[in-house]
Structure formats: C-alpha cells, structure tokens
Image (cartoon, rainbow, N blue to C red; front, side):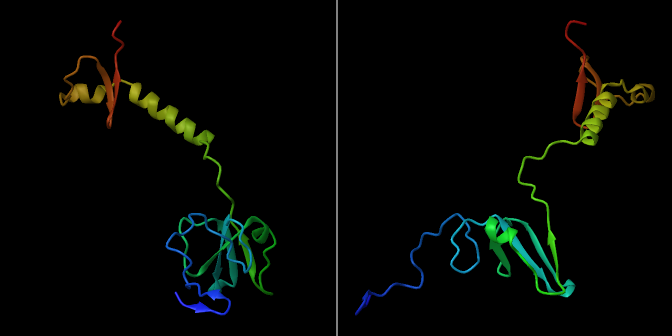
Length: 140
C-alpha cells in the first residue's frame, strides 16, 4: 500500500468480507433493503416487490422508507406487489382438498379386489392411494 499526504491509500475493494445484509441502493443510504425495484421499459412500469432472492444487476434494492416514497416518471405506472413475508397459511380450499383426499384414501378399493389384480400382501391394509396406505386398527 502506498502512502499519500492524507495517509495510506485504500483499495477499491475494502475487504474480502462481504456483508450478508443487502443495503438500499439509494446513494448515501445504508439501511437494510426490504424491497426490490425493477423497471419494465417496454410497458413504462416500475415494479416494486418483496426483496429478491439474489441481487440482479438491473434491479434496485430499497429500504422501507425509500420503497414507501417511491414515485415513477410521468406517464409511468407503479405496480406494488403484495409482501408475502409472513408464513403461508392454508386456505379453506386447501383444507377441504386435504380432507377429501383422506376420505377417498379411507374408502376400500372394491374395483381392484373384483378384478383380481390386488397386490396387497399386508392383511392390515384396508386401502391404498398412491404411496399412502390406510391400515386397519390392530384391535379390530
């Protein structure tokens, strides 16, 4: 490292260690990024969504303050995608589909027994659907 009148010259890359926290892309803002901004020039649209999985060269990471105050150029549209940062909860349709699948698996498969193509070797097995099996209770 060379010396200058102000002290040692610093390298363009401060160190080999990179911070795991992505920072806001706005100049002089060091706050952590919470959203990613992408421009779709063909549609004159600015898309602001949840923080992308990894940094893209033509996307901008923004902190909470800058993402709230975002404005687009005149004639452009801003699309704000919903933040799905919370844990996904099953909907009523998901629970109903799961209950229907369990009921279907619990029904005895009469068609397979009539055709003589039954491959069951376990006397405890009542029904089968894919890789799931319904077993008879040991007490009965």
